[in-house]
Length: 264
Image (cartoon, rainbow, N blue to C red; front, side):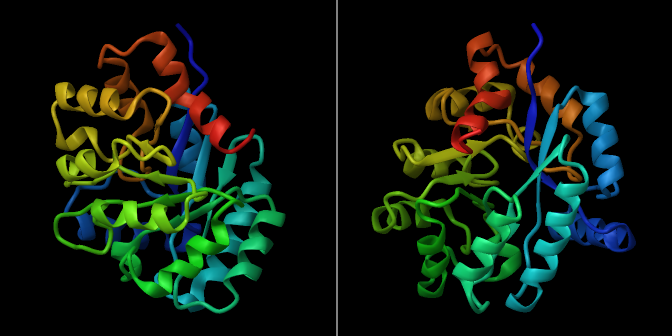
């Protein structure tokens, strides 16, 4: 069966810094990187893999670089609007959060990506609440969630946020808890406003465990993502197809759930 496939989690960088950025990511996660992080390579890999569209994003390491990164993402999406969608970035230390959010939404970006481990703030920090308040009811947030080396993005921090911001829609990346999947399963399984993408997950678990987690969260709440340039979309797609999911579930995970979340 043919599926419409949207890769909901990819990162791109300007050509002149892409290799340096990819090298830094590989060092951060101690994972060999084989893709170069450029837009051209993402488009090529996606076409080879049967991916119709990609959602691109990035994260600002401080408040000063937010607008510059968003400018690049806006420009990139506009130049490749038939193949790319985008989420912008915010940071707790920036000024005028609501103004910048409205600017990127008006320019065509569809949400916000945060990476607390790299941005060096805890999801539970008081200063992060202005980000949730700005996005609540306006757009979803894609969160890097989980890493046993840090507490910044620990899955246990998510439920209190949702109690305070009940209309906030979250995508918790990496099946809710990169390297902390058991903890994520305990605290996120019943959170209706949380979606999970499956990026950067299959490498760290058996096929049986991946199927268990997708079944736990439910076919209506899981999204397909590759985390390019960390992983190749074609290989991630083949793993998802090997899990024994129904055609109905695969249609939802590959694209329908994301389109519904984004009101597209």
